[in-house]
Length: 110
Length: 115
Image (cartoon, rainbow over all chains, first blue to last red; front, top):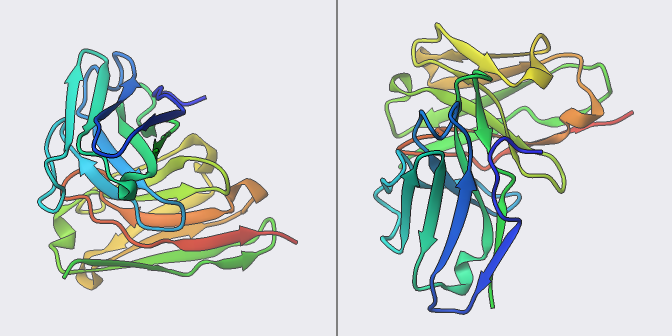
């Protein structure tokens, strides 16, 4: 069981918007910033969002992040078939003194 | 061009040791916290360890404490993970990278633990 809770799967049609939630607690999301990763097994993880809502320069603005209290959300607009992947949230947990990931959310673009 | 290239993975028997390496180029390696993250077959991403830019602080997931050691050589722009007393559950693809911006990551190296 992961410290951060994500839905196992989400789906939407091409061109549509999807959101992925990440729920934590006062010892992790409540006190530290959240990163979001896109990952296809066997390939390099890709950082999409850091510091809750910042995008690395190569990441298109179709990807956005937000945080409120002990929860965070990743938004993806204009869905493309190439967006099909696993998405993970992560942050530092001050009680565990460890980085924690969510269990991952599989995005299917129908 | 930014590159992180992991190496050192392979097949090892339970109880054995392995040292992973991560060669960095194209960015100021010595300025960033670096991490090792792994993905076991059919599982999600799991953080393994991280190390401060100057190497003065390390952190580990509980399951590897006392068995794994993360260290770095900033003069060689390299990150390492020394793994001892390997178990079947340590089998995974191991990635090195940055958990926060700018978020560079390598392609991973496969560790197989089997007799």
